[in-house]
Length: 327
Length: 249
Image (cartoon, each protein chain N blue to C red):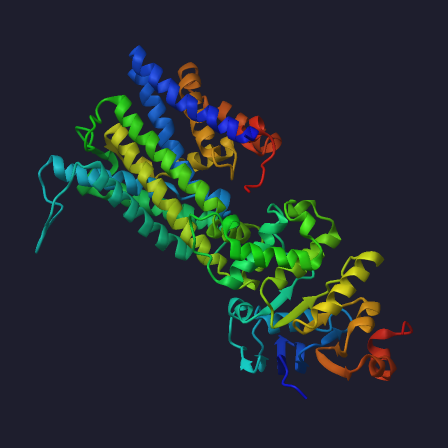
């Protein structure tokens, strides 16, 4: 076992042990914090496919997070108010079923990622960052002006949505769901990184010219990665909305896009567990330091500076040493 | 005379007032090394880009195995076996040597859309990649990170990646660049055997290598082919001496 997989395993163990302890000790707030961390981690695992593996620095991934959130919000809003979502030739009802909501969140985010990717991938570098940011702002202002779904105030959902066989209102059970989805996304990322597609994507990031000269389409590989990435972040958005039982335009804001990037840098870019470590560290800091000092973001900023200057591998890099090639 | 594998007819390209390709005719026949030499700025890099598809010519055409490929993108030409090596190694430095070779094999096999199966467990790809590494003498470095290779080994890997495409023709942009005496000799020996698998269009500055290897030489100056023929004829050509070789030859 390499040192990195040991660190990864330790992280996973903590993500199992701490909520279990909180459950036994009757500390539901700790479970909620852990759930928040795990959902952020899932969103960042999604982003890391684009950013870490594909080298696409998307400053607009809040679009997918928000679309996932609004997918949940709109469907549940209609269901709780007994208003059909669409009443024409056929009637489409809202739903309180998590699996259906997740599917909608994934499909909607993937479609949005396809459109945004098609346009944004015509650029690269700083222009790519700026165009994805612009898309993020478009969605943000659209959500603010969308009166039907709460506009600036957002939408409140009274009861958490259902999952067959589970009581999702019990914090530990909802946590279990989110954790299972995180594991699935990590598994998917690990498979993709080692696959043929991963090899092409990896090379498209490092030497785009080479990929073309061996007869492969690097741009299309990047687009596909961007779509998968958006879909995973969208799923995380649906979970985040369900955790808070609330959606608002802030899920679309550029702060959110920035935070997702921060998770990855904190934890270690292009490391499988980097986004997980980063999200956990972020939520822990937010909670512990945020309690002590309102301006804790200053400390976060200082930490980011230190990491960017001295520890490019982030937290995982610090603990596990240099990245090893996956073979 | 056999039909040329690669043929360039009347290729012209200008950037504003600057004529970089001026009615270039070239052919590459099976089993030969055709070297293209010329002073800096003669239009060699532009020529390679036009042949491989990175740059569209204003006029003229490029034919591969008798088929007009002038309008085809880089990818399509690569799939037809036009294997290019770069002057400055274009390799995925973070990846292993084997992974770089696998990328070529993947392109040749045309199946990059596999998301779950580990690429390293794909036997048929590995056979191609490992054979190519073996051919250039890099088998022992297969597991090494490409960034850890010496400059000479990177040049060898460039050739190995091209080999994975089962080429119909090689287009090599200064494969000797930066190689020492020993590395240069090794590369010269390698190219000498490779030409029997697929002919090589060799753009090269190293005159020793060119005159040792080439079956034919074309001299490019100011975007035009000013001389073309067997090495001895080129060495004796007065215009070439003036344009390029100076007193060296």
